[in-house]
Image (tube, rainbow, N blue to C red; front, side):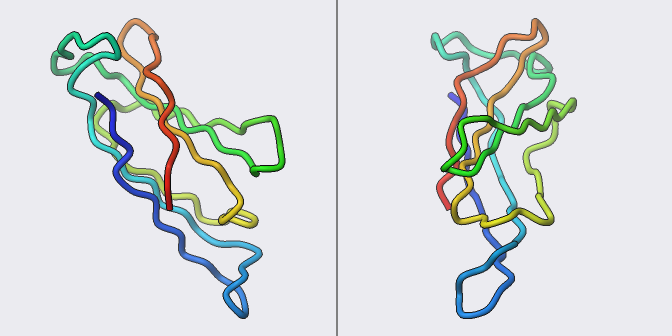
Length: 104
């Protein structure tokens, strides 16, 4: 199972309605595949983060080519409260897990 364990918004703006802000995502290493099979150490080679404004259809994508990285920080995101963030794990065969949506 793959768990996205946190999403922190650091908003910069006036009156609580920020136009830009930073976002940090945190997740835990998956212990098993979607079908329930156990994952062995070293099978996860990286992660994919995709994000988009909730009004847009197209995602922007960040590839993390390190299976030992469990967080990512975006410095400046426009309207971060309206952005959908999702993370998936990638194994050594290039197979993606399901994308998990972050909840701030």
